[in-house]
Length: 206
Image (cartoon, rainbow, N blue to C red; front, side, top):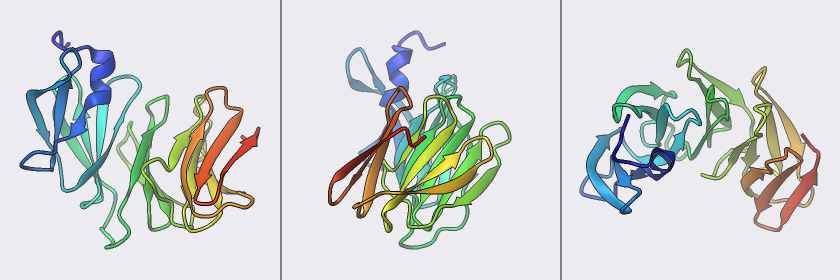
């Protein structure tokens, strides 16, 4: 255990180091809100960070390599790097989220797919959702682990992914255009979607 840090907040404060080398993350001491001497080297172009609710792993999305670095929180070292496939120029991954049960990591690939990493096997599967899923805030998961939602920037809909069978279903967004971010309320009753024209919300679409 790490006795020098407030663990409940430490995991949320792993940041991309904006220092001499951008391919690092840095650990911030919550008590002083200053960087510690601990830096963790990852792969090229880290753009997003996600944490498992069980506090076991931190994941860093390396957009330039289309990979995810897995940081073990006990040792603060990279335990593995998971490749998400070949890099397509102009269609880099943008956002990442972990399911509340810590089982899956979802990455929105701008090339019409959501990549799903299984943290038990570290295998990867791609779910075609179409419509250029994108945005750092473009993924959301229901607190009960039943569904994930991803915005489709190119089209006026979101895709609902069934976590149990990892299949996607489109949900039409009336009067929407270029969806950019999505969130689920803690009671599972509403999904809110922001887009360039307006903000739409839908009751009990889950």
